Image (cartoon, rainbow, N blue to C red; front, side, top):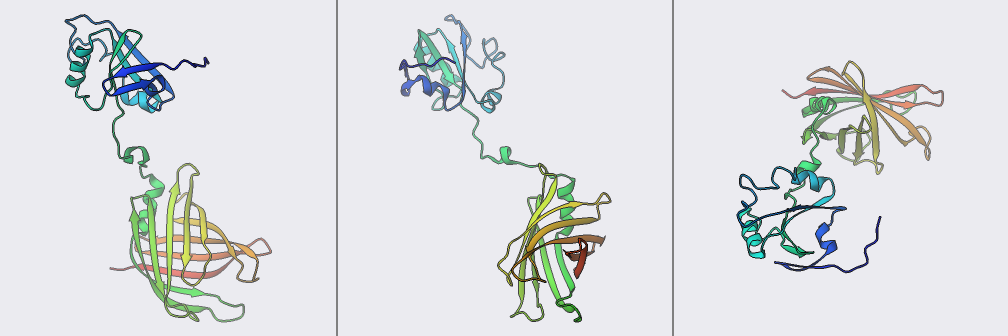
Length: 276
């Protein structure tokens, strides 16, 4: 690596430019230098010397390289060729070491959607089975030795870009102060190769964070999480929510807590039926 201390200055149609300007914010600079005569065809026409050799401009920009194309031709001809390429207002004419740069190819404008686009995979498609309007019947063991509490509710699940599902639930939990609202998010992270998500409810301030996997049969999704211990206040416990499809219109959610004995203890069951 050679350090350049000299302050090079270039004169272009849009004013003064430094050597750093030629890089256009990229990590590398590529200069294609061609020899022209007075009868050389303009760039973009058949026989133009560089159009078959410079490769993909988009590739150059994705590879952190700025592209400069140069030839020893009169300044006025360079400006004319710039206009013929439709680069007026986007390109740059620069003179350096006796060479005239015809244009600097600008990167293709993008709204960023292409770079951020994620194609839905099989795991994402599985989540779309949850989309729809559902009614539910819940049963939960609140305290040892006491009969389970039962309640009814509903859930509305929608898709977000085919990659996520958002589920909003409404129910009247016994002992609660009015209707309770919950919000579920579920997605799949291809890099982690794990299902991810969150759950929040209007009856508590804790954010439950999911990490899970689908069984090989594609019927059961197990979601692991950690949260406040319902059996010992002030401590944390490990939980597992299991979603199982009995049919396309019937799914069952069971909730489990890991006990001190190292085994999972089921404490809640929710049956969901798709509204017809």
